[in-house]
Each structure stands twice: as structure tokens, then as C-alpha cells.
Image 1 (cartoon, rainbow, N blue to C red):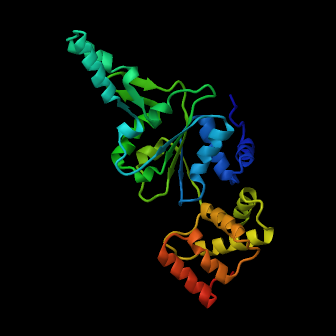
Image 2 (tube, rainbow, N blue to C red):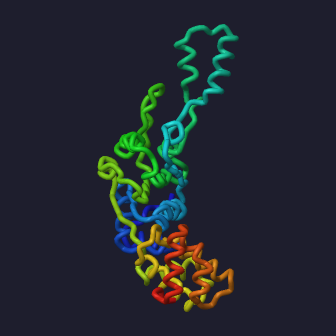
Image 3 (cartoon, rainbow, N blue to C red):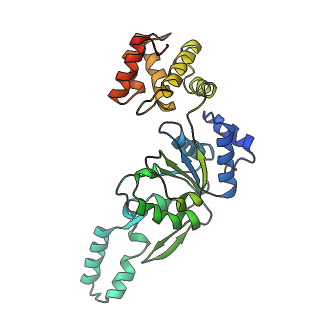
Length: 295
């Protein structure tokens, strides 16, 4: 079993070894979450590397990654558990054919472990040979508020209550990472059970380090030029500014095009890699045409 990092510096090294360039305050939050066994709630704009934290921890600590992707209408059958109804019906028919008529006996038989279908939250409570899993509850802000309320028992006691079976408890807390893009506010009751960290857009220096680590084949001059453009775009009033994920996509796209330097024309032609809304693209093209956005 890979041991947990013993300090903030060790956490920084752990993240860096997987190519994740983290600021010290983020590494501090991760270290405390791991040391205290508390869920870590990461909030911030899309594309700033929140989800990647869970992936990196799972890979570097050699733990299974259990991911629950949230969406509107998410319920316990998809997130926690459900019963294998077709198999239960077959079992009932077999028992009736054998002359079993005691309903309580049938119920005891069909509501057992063999008929339970485990979904992500329940899987995260089960240890693996390398340790407890890393549970990623991704984009919680997309789920409905009643699902948040259901999470309270899981996040407080790391247990799930199944009426037919009883309470299932984790032998020890899993590593829990919760992310939110803040499309709506998450209830305070959830946040109180977690350590909190806001993941902001990176500084120029950190974004340069990220691109150089992730796309080392990019020419240094091109890398610096494109990162400065991305940083400038984030200062504009865009509906959706580009995240780090878009910066990396743009870098790879420019390499594919054989670019060694940026020009206003090349930026305009490739804006669809960076920006995902036509109004944003039109606004940036206008600034490129008038020279109010430097390249």
C-alpha cells in the first residue's frame, strides 16, 4: 500500500510527479484532507484542474478511482445501489416452483447480497487490496438538492443505510474529492462536512509551467506567447473564459498546425479550440481586428 504524503512538501512532490503543477495552498488543502480523513470540496471555474486532483491521487497512491458524475435527476438507484429486479423475479419463480410459499422466507432470500447492485457511492465504501478508493463526486452543482441531503450521511459517517439489509459502513474513510463549477450554491450542510478550497485560474508563471510540463514539445517562445493571450482573454468579459484544459488543447492544436509563433490571423482561425460560445468568439475577433487585443 502506497503511504500517504507526510507533509505539504511531500504532497507537492506527489502531485508534481504526476504532472500536476499545484500552488502550495492547494497542496495544503489536499494534505490536510488526506491526513484528517475529511472530504475535500473543490470549487472553481470549469477547466481549472479540479477533477484532475482525484485522478492524480488515485494513480499516485495506487488506489481505485470511483467516479460519480452528477447530473440533474441523479437518484439513489444510479448513485448508491439498486436491487437486481429481473434476477429477483427469477428467484421468486424458482422458489414457488419448489413449493416455497412463505413470503417472509422469500423476502429474506431475495433481499440479500447476491441481488444487490452496487453503484459508485457504495463501491467507495469497500476496501481494495491497495487501500480505500478515491471517490470523486464530480460537478455536484449539477445534481438536485435532495441528492445533497442524501450525501450527508455518507460524508459524515461514511455509511449507507439499506432498509432491507441494514447499515453498510466503510472500515475506514475513503479519499473523497467533491467538485463544483458553482452553477448554483451547494448547501452549507455539505460544505461543513468537508475541507474547502477555491481553485482559481493559474497565474501566468504557473500556467507556463503547466503547459511546459504537459506539452513539452511546444517551442518555449510559442508557449509563452499563447499563455499570455489566454491570460488576456480571461480579463475580458466573456461568457466562458478558457480554462487550463483549453490552453492545453490550443497548444496541441497549434503544434498540429506547425505553428512556431502566433499571429492575429492564426488566433482568429483557431478560436474554436479556446472558446465555446459564438458571442465570445465574435467579441475576440473584433478586438483582434481593431488591435485592442495584442498577440
